[in-house]
Length: 291
Image (cartoon, rainbow, N blue to C red; front, side, top):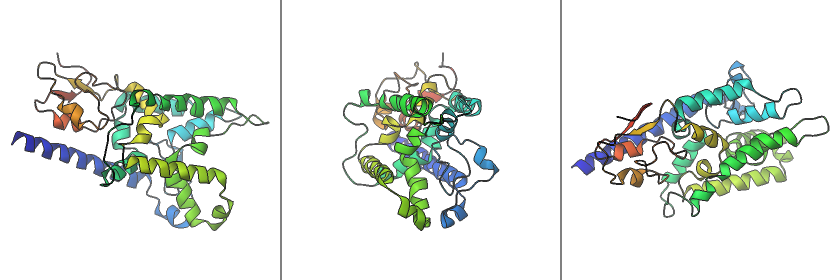
């Protein structure tokens, strides 16, 4: 009976998270007229950075992506630092850590839905997972920060390298809808868009097999928020007086994290599965561990 109750509770948490993700995506990317006409919304809310990987060029987006906004400033001839964007990243990270990845990111929702499709034998991580997780930090430093700053044209203008060459969220939520709505853009699409489309297709196929491969190995925004996981206002704690180290939390965790040992892991997206799976209620949330 206890096992049945635990599974029902775990399923309830997962369904709640899914509906929060869907609701947040609908609210922040709800400019229906943009999708119908292929015109990007340019109203006042577009100056507001949303917490997740939310492409500015998505025709339905009502806000901006923090990674795209940061690159726009770093690559600018006039500016070299965005206090606004960096400040928001620090605020979001210090409050929530990677809870944003698990509950609010549109492309995280896409991967979650794809993983639910009963195709392929599912696994949590790629072989070599411990080394591969550092790739997103390489992408953060190289493609988000250094290349926009240093690889500039004759007039000193840099490019948004991550958005232009890697970001699958931009391809799915912006590139494909815009090309579908505007014939002139389809005629202009070339090798770069073909590369982005192939990359998106690869990530979608991998998402059928491995849980959230883009979030785990490639996302620079996840890398930023992950650094805050151990110190964020909302973080997991272990009541050591209750914990029996049974490993149920690790079994439930889609990232295969031994939560009883690493409640502040940088790879945790705060999905809540471990809390629901714990048979003794030893995992909680808060600023301090239970004394």
